[in-house]
Amino acid sequence: MSSPNAYDIGSLPEPGPDVPGGGRRSRLVASTGLRREGAKGVAIAVVSTVVVFGAIVWVVVHSKNWPAVKQAFFNGEEFRDSFPEIARKFVRNIEYFLVAEVVILALALLVAVLRSLPGAVFFPLRVMAIIYTDLFRGLPVILLVYLLGFGVPSLDLPGVPHSATFWAVTALVLCYAAYVAEVFRAGIESVHPSQRAAARSLGLTHGQTMRHVILPQGIRRVVPPLLNDLVSLQKDSGLVSILGAIDAVRAAGIETATSFNFTPYVVAGGLFVLLTVPMTRFTDWVSARAARRQSQGGAA
Image (cartoon, rainbow, N blue to C red):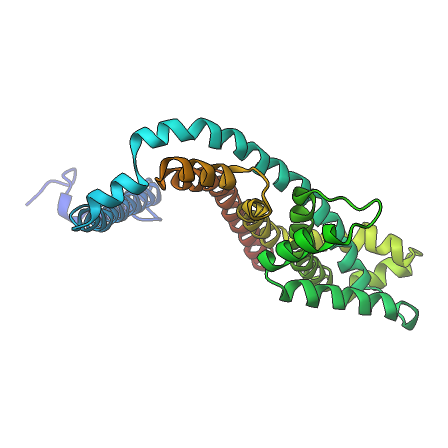
């Protein structure tokens, strides 16, 4: 028979929320288990990715015509020779993109606001905005570049620029502004009508309501799709080359015609990827943050 001061270890209760230190222990065990599961998931993802991409690379490298393809598209010497010139011309693509982006955002916002004007007196403006968006969203960008680049200068109108670069950038602006205008309009229409009614009840005019109440909320909601359109614009800035403008794509074409090797096109493509990938990741981050905020707001 045990003494009254002896403790039976087996009879002690398991630590739990009601036992001092039990809650802390259970949380520690749970967090440790989650970390192990997370590490296991990361390891599986890394291994599977390496296996898949390794298999793809093995198949490509061991194909019968890989040596010829490597020489034509991945020539190291041609890469070193053509990279400096193509990189210098790529700066022009960045300039075209930055100029077009500013004009697109301004024109698209104007078109979206015109489509949102109420009342019969603004009906002609709404019709003009609708025709604009329907027309330029329906035209392929490359076709519009050809039409403006070769058609307008041939009219020889006084005071109208003849620069191929000008009309190529103009074609980009007209097409992308039509898409972005619809994004803006979706943001404007997503604002609840009670917001507009509350602003008008406070004595704000329609313009003041749109500027101080509707647009700030609507634009904030459509930032992710706006960034997606700008990513596409970065790539399509290379279309200016079809009118003869010397950008990265045209420079790559000149190098290819000189060396009879396609590696310069790979160089130009790599530069466009380096430009668009950071913007794409930033877009993903903005979209994820917006989703978190929306879920938190809904939970609250």
